[in-house]
Image (cartoon, rainbow, N blue to C red):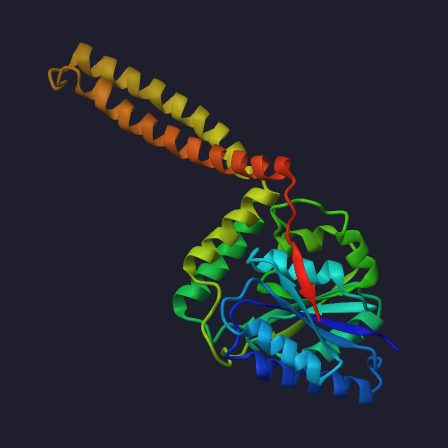
Length: 311
């Protein structure tokens, strides 16, 4: 039978962790009794530098049940790197990644395993509705996915990091050594046969969201700059447009000065181009700086995570 490992990245999740462990153990028992997974299946919690009692709870859960294991990182490396640490470390025929907040419907893991048995190496958990999200979050999420697709980034709409990966897909993922990790964009590039399992997202069981607005914006920028050169092409195109607009503006200023009496000396020819070109230049420098910072981090080749200990 298939050996399943469930990887759960955690950051300050003391409020929800006991219930998450209970539900995941119950799920493993159910899947084992039904013959879906082997008795060697495991749950692995990855502590991403939590400042509360998350790691103590993981140690306690592991001590009470051999099906639970834990990985403690030396500090907080971010959700994507913590998830990657789990994926690259654990064993198992298939690995399912799920958040600790219990918003992802755990029962669909059985459907993911069924899709894997039918030949899929990657199975995406896709939200069928966002009723529990605020209006702002729903609209921003739709705009985010559409923007990524428009810029040529291959992402699955309404999919976060709830997915199943086969051992073959995980071995291929190891060849991706970039420091700027955006798994939602990396996994589709693996190219293996994939499937989609839809589910209704639940409300958070307890605690607070670990993805406030500034982290969501940071993830969005990482997704764009890590997988698309479109902003750079946009700057080049914008430069051409602005050159033509400036040329047309110059002809207009010259015509106004020669054939009308409405021209204010020095205003049109200096103020308008100054503000227009200044804004374009600052925008262009900002986008270039974002890409240069990514290149800078990649060339340093610092480790994406460091494991302090495991239980």
